Length: 124
Length: 214
Image (tube, rainbow over all chains, first blue to last red; front, top):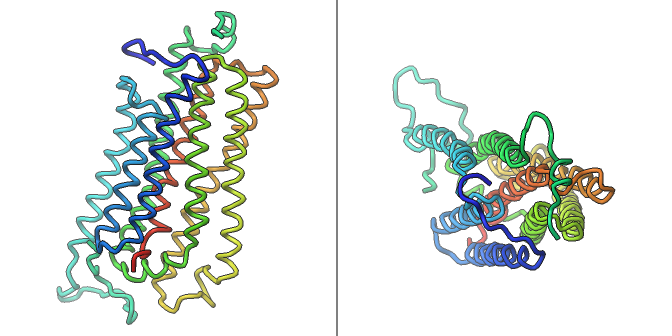
């Protein structure tokens, strides 16, 4: 797009040749995440499921959404979204993951059902 | 086949002085919109993350009630539609008419297939009493939180998939030569479609995969 002149495919076969490998990688990752989710790995089941999702999203962004092209404007826009995401997740989880049982005097405890603790079970 | 200067000129719109700049403008504008979409979806995903940290065991039990086959097949359908959309966008840029028309059509049909499969899945979920509220299938009340998020996330995502109406419209316009293949709008539409695919890429492991190994 901008920056260096890109060599973009101009024939149908060249377009298929440059996109089908990307699709094959995505399908391979889908198969991998499905198989791995049935293998007991404890907390690493979550790690592999989310890790492979990030990989797949990266493949789509780089190749199908053309972020591999040296276009700083589009890369920055994509990165800006991730920056706000990082703030939101880190600040919220810094609270949720560190929460202790309410021990301060005068703390209003939330309604607690038997199976619904008001503090985290620490999934990770 | 090559793109004629005439075709370039007809795709050009105000206020742009060159198609190159117009292309940049469309891509940038769509990316800004996609950034807002990312923040929108991740708000709900953060809610999911918090509840899953609080009630990890009941989320695993609740997620096992989802139908892995519908979920996996639909993921494959969407990933494939991203392929055909990428090819359609590249084909339009290169001025390859037949390739663009066919790939846009297949993309729209795959999107429709996704919605039909989702519909069958919803019917099964409803008959199995997986709607939060009275008569919910699982005894644990926190399992209902997972299913509330399931309906919210997949429902909002399905609304996004209805953008296939625009894919079909662009296909019609290109077929009737009402829209030049050099129009940057094809790339803009493709970017949006890839985001819809990307959102599902994250929903799939969060909804269908927890608790499968247990």
